[in-house]
Image (cartoon, rainbow, N blue to C red; front, side, top):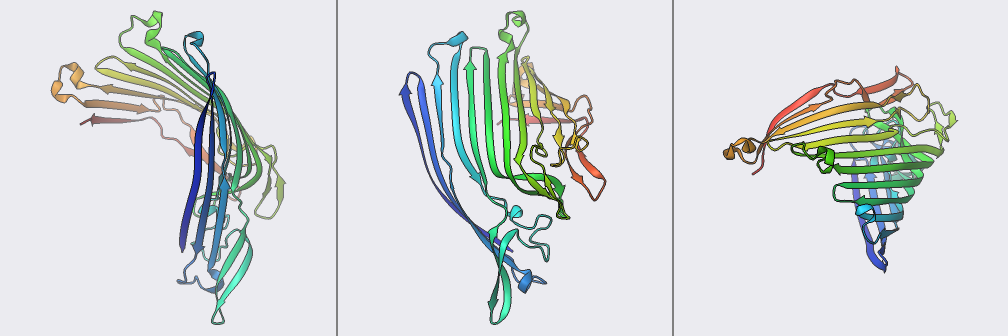
Length: 361
């Protein structure tokens, strides 16, 4: 089969200085996309078993925001406040336009379209032309607000967001015969979250001033609340389930990372603690169909021979990276199979290391 794509877009972007440290940003974006799918006549793909469709999308994506730079140096640093609003669209992926459980290389599988028109030539059926796609393009309204503060040895950033989706293409938490995730539209979904970032130069603290080398601590944390506002799910036997209010599948409740970078001169080190919250395997929202959260420690060292009095090796580093240093057993992803053994969880790698030499020319 063939899949021909064409796209063009027009956009305008402008920033305005409004005075008193306030600025405004306006972004206007129009997109046109077209996708033409056609199964070729080969083997058993003949007549009614050949499918063709063409989809066109026209998207207008306006965005705007305000940013205020506070005068002076509040708390000894630069303070900025902002608020943004935007609208965005996304067309379904190629695989999402075809049969939920099969693909275009499966004989007899049909595209997810509402109207089929037989196309004849010379009195013989050539193929079936499909219109009215059942999987619709995503639409989202995005609201964001937050602040940034940057001082001499410390920086902070906090962002909050609210995303209202219509027809979001979501994971159902199952796999098709080819091992690909089964996905489809959800009527309305809601994503809310907070994102925190902080970086501090520990060497600047009086209590650590005598410690050799430089040391930087960075923290990143994201907490989200994601749910179906309105969602009807149809099982394989046609049973309709109202899953409104359930959490989305495959979305960790939180992601966090704490890193300590140290430069001791000839030796550099990094300790990184990563954490992820629980995530559900499917859209049922059942506690027994989920993956527990985890915490993992990674450690890395880099030795610079040139700093040890070997100038001929300038630009080289000997690196040792130890992943999952505490040998934690955890899963990162999974799905639910009602016809199989239920929960399937994909385990992460146990403790392992990477030893190498890096040379910058």
